[in-house]
Image 1 (cartoon, one colour):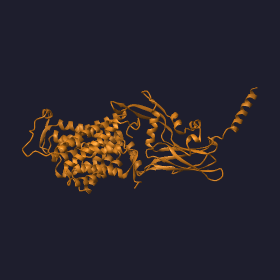
Image 2 (cartoon, helix red, strand yellow):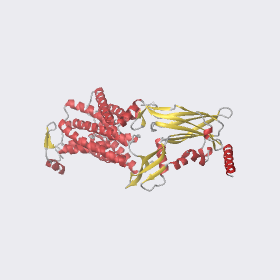
Image 3 (cartoon, one colour):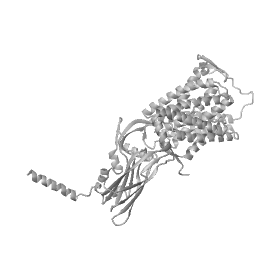
Image 4 (tube, chains in turn orange, purple):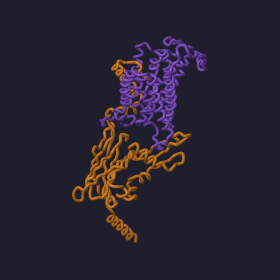
Length: 258
Length: 310
């Protein structure tokens, strides 16, 4: 009896495996990033990452540039005696450091809310992911304010256009330009691609994007963080040398000080 | 031209080079034009272009090191620096600057550093702007004939207090004798404001020297620059060491702009009427103050903000 039941369960499981849609892991797409490494140098002003891939027959694609979850402490403003003050600290957990989302169509036209939540796509799934705690009662508007802050800062953007054009039989060419603002800190980030057909995932791919400080920007940031005393002395000496130099250029006319 | 952005590694923002040079040039031009420091205008302007307030204040102090170095050097060559008075003010300024930096550290931990910096600005700009406006208006009115309307100097409550303080010291260069506690206390107060506002304190120190310490005007500017130099060296070091908020790249771009602007301003000022110019400066100061005050009163764009400066 036990053997029959075990056999039946095994058959049911195998049957389900055959009937189910192919898992996204089964069909991986090669994703190309140009550049795959961003160098933050003296003249850095953010970067645009060109993402391209050859995908199979699909009717919608979603690109997501994101990084691991972290915890952030934010100040909550409130009005006290007519003046806007920081009145409480809000701890926000499961915060992606960056969240740049690109779609080939409106997200609700590409996949269902359940699928969006499953893959962490879009505003509503982000709303479920990010958690707020505060010593004072939550107001309920925390997520909207948090999103506004991140969008203003440029680290969250859900309006990137993904182009999906036919490229031969059963193939499409995907391309998009993902904007990375200068405020995104150095680190390793992941670009994920999800392709959907009739609302179901059919293909996926991912690629790593790294942001590294180089040259003067790297020297300055590292000195300021690791050796602040030396950085302070350097800042003073450089300022004095430049001050004397500029003074000599203009014949040190007095009265231009503070 | 549109690609000329500079990345500021401590502020972690990118700003167009011409915006930084332009701000430095504008503030330096006003400084040279009106003979007052531009630090108190530069920090709020930096905040307006998106530099975090604590980085703006600390980097402004760094660029004032450069401006006051060349100024002190020039005045020293002319023999217009009272080093004895300057060193006592420096001692007070270092104590005040250190206290101010620690105060910022505590306020940052509590999340209110930016608010305190802004409110200090609103109050100081309000007082200075109103005073300058009033003084300039008064000077533009027809003056009484010589010998008529001279108000006899009477000893104030403040003057009485100053005279009662012990440890009198003679300052030969300035030709005055007063208690050593006077410059120490005043230097400390200016030092605290320097750290909070990222300014050299010259715009507070000059009236303090003229009206409270009764120093002659020709010695005031050089001695003030000497004191400001050391106060800002201390503030720059402390801000770098404790708060990691000095952006040297930002400071260098600002001072290249401001030193150039100061020279241009000084040349233009000789061709214009002083009191009319002062009214324009007072109006600019008051406009900056109103803008900052509105920022504290009007509903902010977002009700959440990042903790700390950067």
